[in-house]
Image 1 (cartoon, one colour):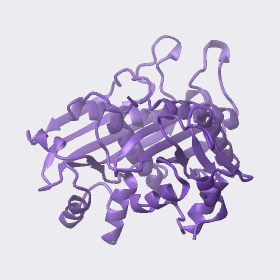
Image 2 (cartoon, rainbow, N blue to C red):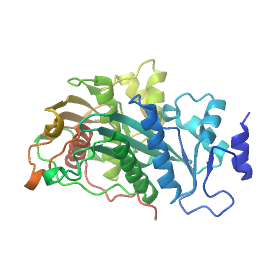
Image 3 (cartoon, rainbow, N blue to C red):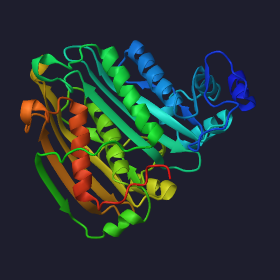
Image 4 (cartoon, helix red, strand yellow):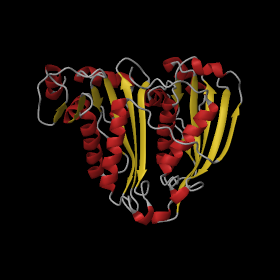
Length: 365
């Protein structure tokens, strides 16, 4: 049975705590977006509330949005404990119950107070008619990113950093933008195309299998960040990417969540259920920060593997070892302070080198 708030949305009635942007008016061309409750991996409820409010507030001024208590009530009624990890079939029921055209999962991957504060967010959108990510965003920031000579521009409060980052991510979501292209990342890079059958890339969408991690303070978190960064990097490169929850569902049905590689039966299950052309996975071999305060130095090493979904043959492999302070430029303007920013840049560099470029189809026509 659907809760009162869901019924109210379908009837166009506003209830307290419900965000009904566009109710009773003509919805924008992009349609109504259902924003799932933010998934907080940081353990800071105050920052989670601020991020959700800033994101939904910024997005609601540009697009019709359903969010907040409405979505929580419907998800609770449907017994969806973690909607972000739900399979597309469950998300489709949630979309149908609220009358939305798409669903968006927003995650706080990292939120740390300190000197400087650090934050990392990811967001994926799923249209109501498919299994593929229709938009992907990744936002990482530290209080040092905009620092100028004499300390100007430095941000010391996590709340300010979080609100700015959430609003930037929301604007990109509203515009369906992949974000501004970054300059090529310099680092120790090694790539190899093992199998020339790159046509396998065009036989279906890509499925990103959860990464694993070796050298990191929190290996599980580093692996999750790397997986989200890979999905974003692939989507930005114009690739069709299967919704991460769908991949997770198939692997869990096998009784385990494979990381960093696939047994033949796991690959066969993904192939049968999702029809991917290739599988993409990898390993975070280093994800560490050294130094203190104004001298934080991120170091990242990550490998990426592209595997043919039909026979499991390795199509391409690459790895990169990058230092955020390797090429600071004038006044340190090109210094990368954030671990997550460096990891996304590294993933993007590998994707660019390993996979043929395609025209990006992310923007709405």
